[in-house]
Length: 150
Image (cartoon, rainbow, N blue to C red; front, side, top):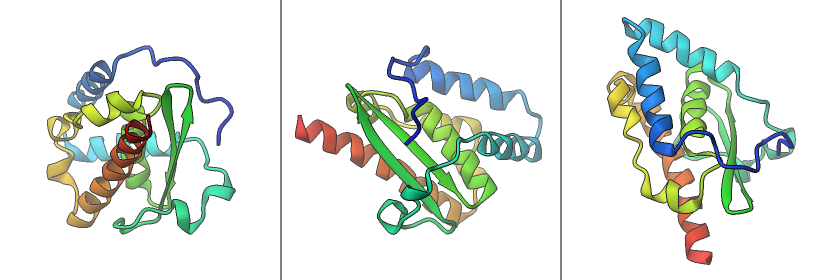
């Protein structure tokens, strides 16, 4: 994992983080600019430790390779992920920004309203939509598992 992941609550609420993403994407005039921004966000993801690039952490249902790892830190779940595809890495960056370092209850209760609000769902290929769905399912399933265990 990454030792520099925060142990404290994020500065913004999960709702505020979604609103911030909506505002950021509204700044761009067209989807080519939004794709470029998405790719740039993906490039800024921290590298995933090679030890986690194994089949047990690889998501099914994604056209590209995606590895997703969740760890419990106190009362929060911190997610780490990476993909071999630039746009998918950008999608990961968005999901981690909203859902990582949140409580399982926050994660389970929060729908990804920012996705339709920025038009991402309408501008992804069917295979990328499937991958987005697989990532969201994995994040939510991990949160539900923590809630069930409590």
